[in-house]
Image (cartoon, rainbow, N blue to C red; front, side):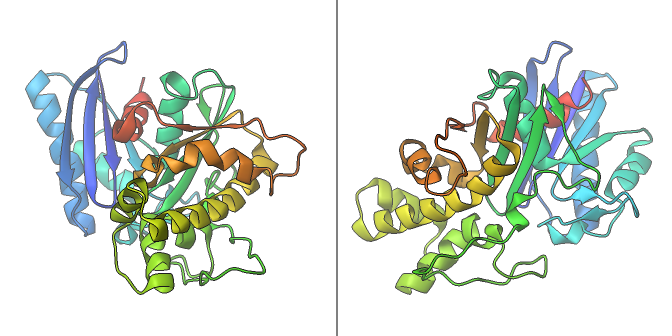
Length: 296
């Protein structure tokens, strides 16, 4: 059987799949905001599932950031306490075996390509918009990690500016200014709403208000969709995927799916934009299913 761990900024989820890919059990725990606590949580979840089912499993971990090929440490994770740490090696030492480790967005994209929303497409770009903004590229059900192990990191491209923009180019945790992530992430969404209206609201509440017809929130959501289209147009111009599958909390914004393609046409270098922008099939479990599938 196969265990997957999805190491999120706020939650860590584990799943165990049988050989056919059927889910047996799934568990969630809060993610500690420190490195040793994160290691403890991952290993506790693996040990619990193996003890319960009395079988040694393959272990796949989906993590923020990526492994540096030079240092074998995590780089670029928005869960900053794991950066510059040998996460894969330390988990292997504690579990006394080799594991699989991939960027969490790669795991999400693999799951949605394999048996999710992107199943009918050869090229699938998976997008996670939550605490951060990540992406993963899968071609013919194989993860494309890239020479520097950063394929899909569109969240740290610069957001293209418009002449009438009112949103500020905020500092990003990566050290740059004006990254796509600072506009499109859940925290970025809330921050820009505060900048415009001096009202501090969680991104989820703003979405709910928009869904309930609040004019201020609805206008803000459509401004957000314009920035979203600018960011996704960079992906389409370079990769030209058949499907872009969305995950993370912001993917639940219902206004995206009926309006994004019209906005993409303003920015994509093509007379038509037939790329499907789709909501994920497996919900919050897509990343952890992809992590488990690394060992299948």
